[in-house]
Image 1 (cartoon, rainbow over the protein chains, first blue to last red):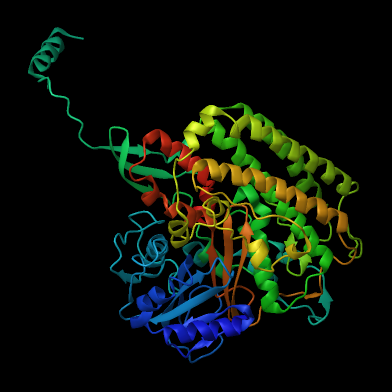
Image 2 (image 1 turned 135 degrees about the vertical axis):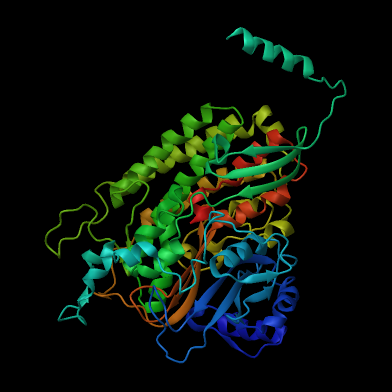
Length: 187
Length: 398
């Protein structure tokens, strides 16, 4: 089954009409209040829990490339990836969480593997997973303040001194011309 | 000691009360972060009643390097150097899904020769990774001999990887669009490209012979060993449904009887051109996890043998722009790494670095099953179970 057919079929199963399959990645958007229900519906067909994480969509960012479009709505996008081991298909489920009250129901009851992934997302983005059995930090020291993967969280060492690898950005006169390697970029 | 001190001491002794009743309250046992069985800096906090584990909480994060945040201030070519440090036992294999994801977003077709070289080196990384596992689990159970056997042959494989890439652990050999054209530094002319080293095909074939030989030795030496069987058979059983819900992947999942191998289902490298079997176990215990990996080494050596015989001529790199900018888009690409599913979710906003890079690592999910798995097990079995899961803390913490 092609990614577009898969996305359409999964969207139908969970009652969503918002899906995409760009770059071969089937992605289905789900309303936040249907998040757990949708996973429960899919858990028989897609028993393999691959991962869960989030994206901070922000118009102004301290690090990284700012989004191209001006009119993006600031929000957290929570993603989970499920798979079927019989067909080898995998689908990414997505939901939007508001930044004012970043909370979402926990999947830990449906998929045991969501437990650690939600702890990580909670620590990195400050999202509250309601109903999680043990929503404590997983990576950072207890005394750490802030949520590092938020776009507003500055990488302190980069504030003091920009990453030296960013200096080679001047495009060559023949930028369109082909080249096999960019030695300065090689890291 | 002065006389006054002595008097104080004797007074304290007289106050000590001796309990005649043997009480065994639950005790908290702390393993690690520095403990040989934890393969790095993993800490396990267990509540034990005698030898039985009643509750266990793994504590991770001692190796956390913040790669997902770092990736947001790096360009795509620079991230290659980061990702092969995630799971350092199979560094080369970490680069592949990231490269494939970036190339698919940029719509670059990688030349077939480069794909074959990637595939050969990935399978060599798998052999090297599994040989470390095959030697370390018996070592933790008290057998030191297999270590010497397996690591000797691993050295041959690492030499081959080093011969091609220049690095044993962190090859940093992939480039967007293919592989690095010059294996050795110092090529001053742009058109001079150094390919695979001389004699690579013959040396690879002979190394694969040695690898298969040591696997046959291991079958007798370890799998047929009475003590090894008693320590591992029926210990640490992960049923298939639990494994799937926890996201356990790779050989750990296949040992539970699930024939799920991304080399067969996905098309990130031309695995469909080769003939190999997906190895599965039936019980999902420590013994099966060992046996599955042992057979996987043999299968990987078969793939390498076929690939070096058929390696096509051609370019090592596709034409790529000098400044790498990835068009706006999102993609998830996963690959069958030696330890399980490794994947990268790239969100690009059209810049020189990703807007967000989610790194899905196998060891993270494989370890998350520990709390559930170790409940009710004996402390000595904990060592066998930990050893059988084959994790690297860099792969857990990223």
